[in-house]
Amino acid sequence: MSAITEMKEFSGREKKEERARNWISKVKSALLRDQVPEVEKCLVLSDLLTVLALDWYNQLSRLTRTSWKALLEGLVAKYGGKNSVSVGRLFYHARKRSNEKPLEYFYRLNVAAIQAKIPMRNGSPATRKEHVNH
Image 1 (cartoon, rainbow, N blue to C red):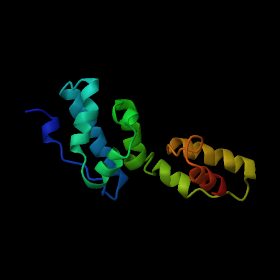
Image 2: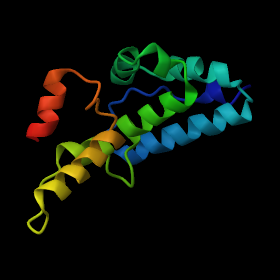
Image 3: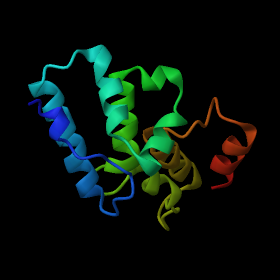
Image 4: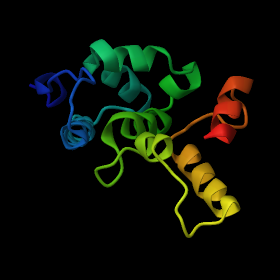
């Protein structure tokens, strides 16, 4: 029996990012143990996603859905967080510090947006305006 068939599905409803990170880690290990070829990893992962996570997956570009590295980075950014705080949350809850100059804040905000994969440069005008007005 393969390790990947024993994996539980991932719904994206998990409240704790640690659980999502653990699930992602288990999937990576199972794919490695089963020696799944690089081109099939994305398909295997998509079969394990349900509900919110599947909705998230379906809205990704075809390029992202077919690149294991890009898909994994997106999944970690969306659900796994970074050091127990998601990068998206870091961006959306960022505030200017009292000892920080406006330009320093804007640079920090840009870095958080890039890490959260927010399309500042190539996104819609509304997305860019929201980023600047943040």
